[in-house]
Every structure is written in structure tokens, then in C-alpha cells.
Image (cartoon, rainbow, N blue to C red; front, side):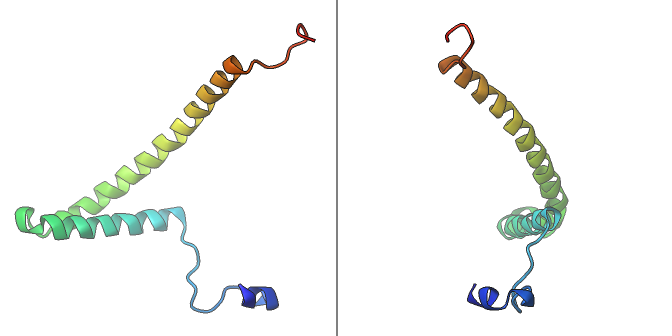
Length: 95
């Protein structure tokens, strides 16, 4: 942080990794989960469990993100409706 304050034109400090995009982060998370699944289940189901599960995990994460985005809008509407019922907005009739 001190280097950035003293010399902001230097950009990214050497050795620091740039922030990954959402797709890259999702892929890395799928790979990590795949490795864990492979290490846990390779004795029982074979060594291909991790390789096969990686695309499935990636698709699950994409679907989860889409569902979260939809749920965020739904929750916002429900909270606004509850707030309007609990604390009604001021109207001209009350003034």
C-alpha cells in the first residue's frame, strides 16, 4: 500500500496476481472441488471421478449464480413489500 501511495504510476506491484474474472474464479473453484472429490472418492469409484465431476461442478456453479441473481430480485421485492406494510409510506391523506 505504501508503494502505491508513493508511486501510483507503477501500476501493479510486481509479484501480485491480477484479480481473476468471474469465469476464471469459477473454473479454479471447480478444479479445486474436483481435486477434493478425486482424492476422497478415487478408491471407491476410480481415478476419473475428479475429471468427470469438474464440468458438472462448473455447470452447477453457473446455475447457482443465476439462481442467486434471480433470488436477489425476489428477496428485494419481498423486503420492500414487508417494509411498506410495516412502515407505510407517507401519503397526502395523512398530512
